[in-house]
Length: 56
Length: 453
Image (cartoon, rainbow over all chains, first blue to last red; front, top):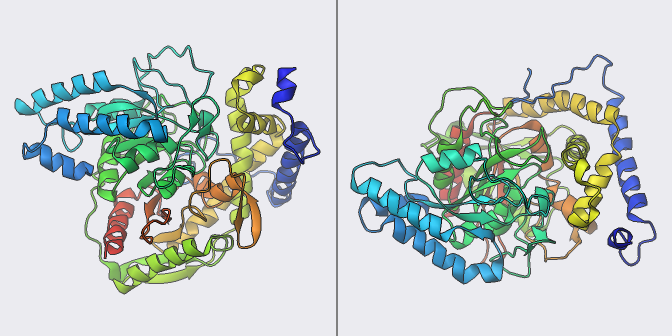
C-alpha cells in the first residue's frame, strides 16, 4: 500500500512511525501530567486567550 | 532599499510606484529560481495597482508611508482572487473569495502585493522544505534552510524581492526565518493583529505580524495591520496608536538577561553575539539585570501539547488522504490524535499560572534579551544539530527558544546581530510587555543603531 510505504521508518530505526509517535506523545504527556499534579481541581480554563493572559 | 527610504524617494519624485514594483519583480525573476521564495507571483496585478497608486499620488491622494510599497504575503494569508495554497495540496479548490484582515489593511494603506511566499507545509514546521512546492533556500547560503514556517517571506525581504512581508508565528514562525535570514520580524502581542482570513494551525497560539529589513519598517507595517477586528474573537479592542520608534532614556531601562534556560543549549557564536548586544546597550547606559525565569521547559511542554491537539483538530477530517500530506507534518498530526481531552484541558489550565509567573519577570525588567534561535541556519535536510555537545532534533532545537513566548502571548522580535563577513545571520530576540509594542520597537531601534557602530 502506498500509505504504508509513505510511513516507512527511516533506515536504522526499528519502530514504525505510529509507535514512534506514540512514544513521543507518551513522553510529552508524562511531563504534562507531572506538571498538572500541582493544579487545583478548580483551576480555571481561559481558552480564548486574550492579550497578556486573557481573562485576568 | 528600505520601506522608509522608498517612501522618501517616492515623495521626492525620484522613483515611481511602478518603478519600485518593477525592481522587486526583476529581483524575483532573478533570484526566485534559485531560492524558491514565492509560490505565486502576481506581476501583472502588481504593476496595474502600482500604476493606479502613481495616479493617486499625482492627484494628491497619499495613503501614507506604505503607499506604493511592494510587499508579499505568506501563502496562508487568504487574498481575494489569488490562490492560497498554505503550502499544501489540501487547498487546490479554495474559493479565493476571502481577503484576510492583514491583506485588506495593507491594501488600504497602499501596499502593492507582488506575490505569495512559500512556507513549511501548513505552517507546521521550521524548515520551509516543502514536499509539494520544493525547498525554500537561505539567501546567505542556499544549502541552508531559511527557517520557517514563514521562510519565503524571510527570503523575499532579505533579497529585496519585497520590501516587507507578512508572516505568522505559532511557535516561532516569524522570528525563526527572521533570525536565519538576517532580517527583522515581530510577533506582536496575541490579539493585536487580526488573524481573520488566515488558515489556522494552533488556534490559541497563532499570531500574525510583519517582517522587514529594519525596525522602522516593521513599525510602519504594524501601524497598518494592528487594530480591532470583530471577525477575530481574540482581537484586542483598544485605541489604535502609532508604533513609530521614538527616543528612549537608556538610563532608566533595565534589560533582563536570563540566568536559566536560554543559554543552556546554544552555539558559542550565538551566545557571544547576544552577550555583545547586552554589552553595547550597557555602554549606552542601560542596566543589565540577571533574571531567573520560571520553568521554561514546563511552558514548552504546555505549548507542544496545545499545538499538537489544536493542529490535529484543524486537519483530522482530512487525514484519511495520507497522500496529500508530507511525512513530517503527518507524523505531527498523528501525534495530535494521541493527546487526550483532559491532557489538552490541563495544558490550557496550566497556561494561566505559568504565564503569570513569566509576566512577573517584567516587574523587574523592561525587556528580556535572549537568542532568537540557539544557532544559525542548519543545512537543508539536516535532521539533527549539535549544541553544547548534545545532539538535538533540528525542529525541537529551533523552537526551544520560541514556543514559550507564544504561550504567553507577549510581543517578541528577532533582529539581526552584527556577524563577521560571510557568516550566517544570528538573531537577537527581545521580549517585551503585553501591548507595549511602541516601547519594544523604540528599544529595538536603539539596539539596531547600537549594532551599526
